[in-house]
Length: 501
Image (cartoon, rainbow, N blue to C red; front, side, top):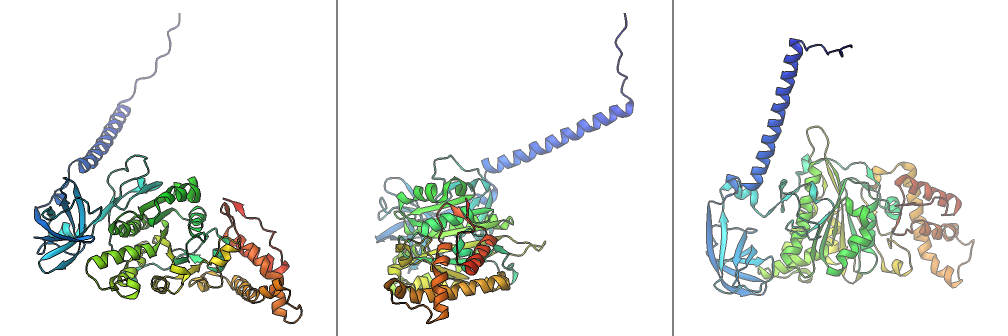
């Protein structure tokens, strides 16, 4: 009977190598465990800097409109500081200092005024100078778990999908724009997926566009198309003063699952306080800056700047500012540039790269007046404007973009000479077609009288058909120019078929 062969005994060197490997693995495990413990400890136990060194107390003296006068806060608080009001029913209500009058601080609550009365106690946490500078104006802790979620301006999830992951980078809500001399330049041109915008308002990464539209002309639908079709890493959407019933409609119908999967949606509905509606814009910018600082390409959509300005008007008038243009106090028009300039190219990093925030700010023009104060101010700050016209929507062409009144200031730097020639020719044809199409419909047009008019009659309807697009369609940037070239050469718009999104 044969005995089974035995494996040779390991040598001394092999034993030493195995022991060393085991020690290294144990050390690595111990390091990971210690790092995890430190991370957990930072979440469980607050750091020394986050503990206030004292609490300042005051009380409500009187209430007028949307604001309250508080005593005992004058020497230690400033504009933008947040205090806590102990309501008569025991609730803690967060409020913000918006003005000072004589010996009193004027505060506005982030919630309802109900339950606040004269004599209610007010408290303000005191920190050392370094921590006070860090917390001034409010902060948010943003992390990657925000993507795919719907949150309110305080960073609280409101979509019923559970809590967000704790921790993250501290982002100031009222951060300053990057220094002009250290900002990166605009990036390469970006594919928006919308034919009319790709052709006539071609956009570059880091550009800021204004979307000017009245109510009911398809603005929300166009924003949803941009989220689904634009080539970006993350989309941040700010719904300021939106109707409550339309939030789910926008998320489920306009965004859809594909758009929501890469989006952060910040919502403050029309029934919230003016401060919450204002903070919806600032919170969205803070989230966009977090992803931008990671080197990502971010698409920021804000609907709408007009409601943001209306919230600023409520705050300014409650603080005692005099009304100026159409009731807007002067602070509204000084605040707008500080908000809008935060979008765009990020600071240039040491490696020569920079993240970008490509932004589309919608402006709800009152009475379809494109020259009302907010629209006029925003148009002068941004890098281009897209005008949506009610008569185009009523004619059934969507998206209802008036390409003749829309422009992108970056077009000269992102179109080739051939593409620029195509767009200029198409604009001339559409302008002429707009002049003569009523004559054609009335039967008063006589062919042969004007060669440019004859060309417009032949090609104008085909160009309009080309830039008509259903909600579920998308077309790439290069395909758009090929399709326009085909239309101008043949007068037919049916050769290039948009891809389904």
